[in-house]
Length: 234
Image 1 (tube, rainbow, N blue to C red):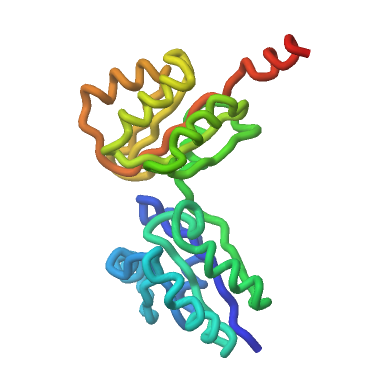
Image 2: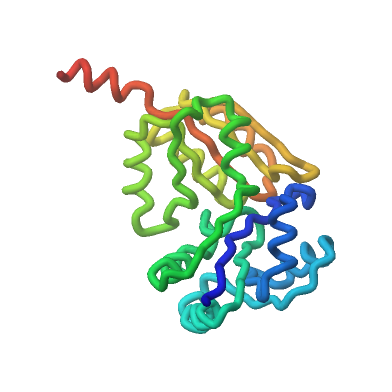
């Protein structure tokens, strides 16, 4: 009988944001795959968990895929975690999950922490429908994606590094207009958590005069004029 692959979310900042089920799962599996074993070792020590750890990240996931599938087929239960949040959401995980599905290995995905949900709720923008784009391409395909966002009717979410935040806001202003509403969430669940709401123009002015650190989630109002323009053209 083959083992099971558990997808286990970990806290995005505050170490108390982990479920009892996630803790029990990590205690019971045979192996934990971690994006950075140093980061995960700190969390596991905090939780009093001692289990074998193996690095699993974007640079080695293809190389060790067959080995992991072999271990699962031999009956080992494996948990996949990332440095923070839910594996597979702008983090490694998709390749292993897809291969496990193809090999008919049982996958159990636990609910838990992810950065874009609290950012979306905090934004005050419509969240009955939304689109998640993760990190935009840095070079090839970036302009194509920005043009696509011009037509996005729903509230949309992107991740960005603190070093490129102002550049992103400026690009969004160019494509969406200075008056488009947005929200920047920084260091969610951590000591210096910050949420700043305003137009793209206001946010650019604010962050141009302030150094930025930490993980960034940007939530942007959708294009409210798309449906109106379509109705007029029809």
